[in-house]
Length: 135
Image (cartoon, rainbow, N blue to C red; front, side, top):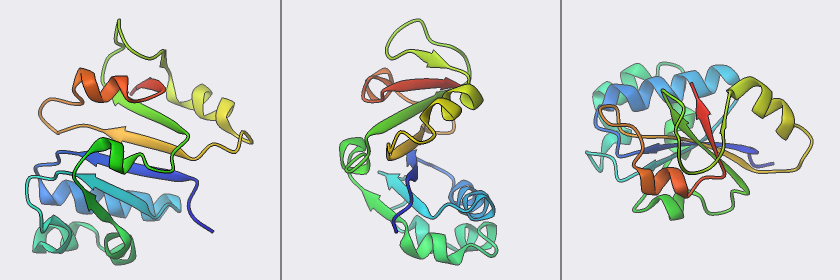
């Protein structure tokens, strides 16, 4: 059965962060990782990525690289943008824990969407999502 939760990294610039995300996903029992236009197209096989993914090579092997956020969201019914601070525009902003609790048992295929390390998600990418999580 496919994961009901997908992790999407948009325009990731550091290979180590991709590996660390894969490792964190594995620890939590998730395997569906999609990268949108990473800085390096071969990031999934770079030495630093593989090293940081320690024990999560299976997550990297299944991961996909796609050209657009729309492609990454294919098959997703509820997407959650992430932001360091609440936003005054776009989709409603929620604290993660209560929001996730409200999604339990709804049958949604959920995506957690993370932006570039330096800038976070663009306004356009946040608007593509149903909710914004203040993390």
